[in-house]
Amino acid sequence: MSMKEVRVASLGLDKTSNTPVVILQEKDGERVLPIWIGPSEASAIAMELAGMKFSRPLTHDLFSSLVKGLGSEVQRVIITKVVENTYYAELILNRAGEIISIDARPSDSIAIALRSKAPIYARDELLEVTAIEIAPAEAGDSEGPAAPESQEREELRGMGPEELKEYLKKLNPEDFGRFNP
Image 1 (tube, rainbow, N blue to C red):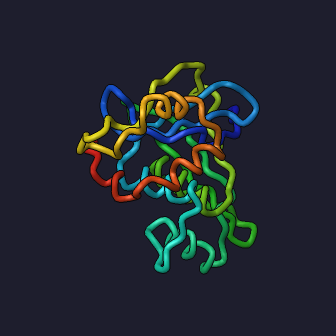
Image 2: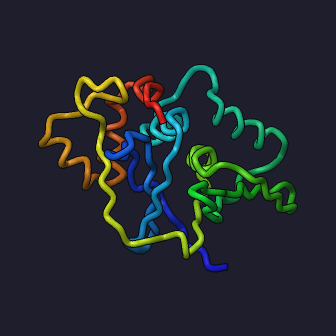
């Protein structure tokens, strides 16, 4: 089983379905893995990418604290397969040298990996070279965050991680809760 390390390259809306999508890109290459996710997971990923902290732990923060409190650490996340348009992942934990694999949704796994500073891997056969058109929802659209002006929207398509982080800081996290997947 050949795996490649990936990173969160972008987060946005699939223009055709108005569904949040996270784009994973191989660290040392061009191939990507788009994964359509739910609004709460999109919000959790966006908030972590933007460096937003809250006074009380959110669900993915709680999970990360629980793992650590039980003497374990998230060693890595592996996006393992797709079956009938459903993606599967494994959280790989290390507890005193014992490796524990937990079946998980990729969206939750990504949110937890970001919080744990754990690497994310994808099976090589899941990665593809493709152009995926994602952008924020249109202005005034109640399905998602208001879209930026069209010049800024064009810039979003080519954003790197730092620019994405700055853009996400300006978003209201509740906007993600308005998506209808």
